[in-house]
Length: 415
Image (cartoon, helix red, strand yellow):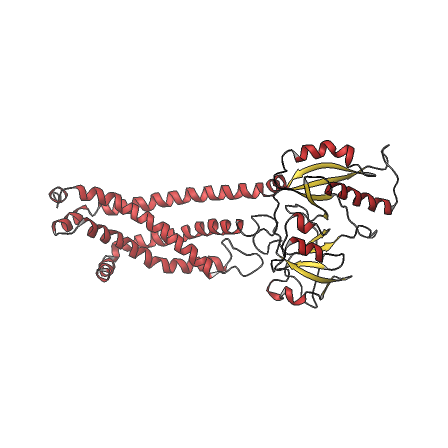
């Protein structure tokens, strides 16, 4: 039956060639739409490398010298003030962990970078430099690349050495091969003490796009270090978030004024996340809405094409019924023909899709890496095939059902 159907479809090539051309164009357009949505979905759901649930950013301010409330403090006293402030916060019942950081916390619109290398091997893109204190791992539940717990990483971060992300050198170097070895900048060397999972900048950033990072320990007593240290991030215990910001700010002037330091503001990381990804989400929403509109138009076009094509074959349906064909036989015949034409054009359509991928005209799961991914290409092609097949089936089934309700004598009246 299938061989006979293929033969009949080939014999009607004059009437099918324009339909095949239309399906070829539609296949490429639908694949491009599906690829964007699929890659965006996969990218959004990739592991972030941290957990911001119950986390808050405390903005630490410093009284200016010209203020009447300013108290002269030497360097050792300023260091002691910072340690006292964070110790007081740790003693607060709601707070589980607290850590200083410098342009390092998740969903940070600012960044710092240094040029690191191992021997003559350099990272192939931007490396995010994060200066943090050990509890930073506990605050954001950062895990090692070998599933080490945040507590284990914090214990390893004893003041010397650095952690690098598992993708820092890409495919050029296995990061575990250089643990306990040193990586260099132009002016110093740092021992690698561990490897962490990459920390992504946002849900809409692809792999390799600003998620390569290195974590260095903050030495509060180092006068030469250029740390602002106005970031103090805390994790609140489960079920103790209610009114945390209001309660902390109410106590700020009484309990958390240390030397010239004071708490300026408190913001949840949910709010920081929304500020960071809001515009990207809006862009994706606009793109998806536009593509949904395009798919509706494609559906209506294909639906109309197969509706008209089926309506033109009412007499053929009647003849088949007269000759003993059942409803299921007629449906298989007409739908099978449409799917055969779609299957035939899918192969050249995949070739065009591969060219679009090769020239990086589509979305990609990776950044700064070869974008040709056969698995991604074939998955999106299969999804496109299924979508178009459903459009074809809908465009054939409805008019075919109406045609088969007619009595054969009525359908053949004009023949």
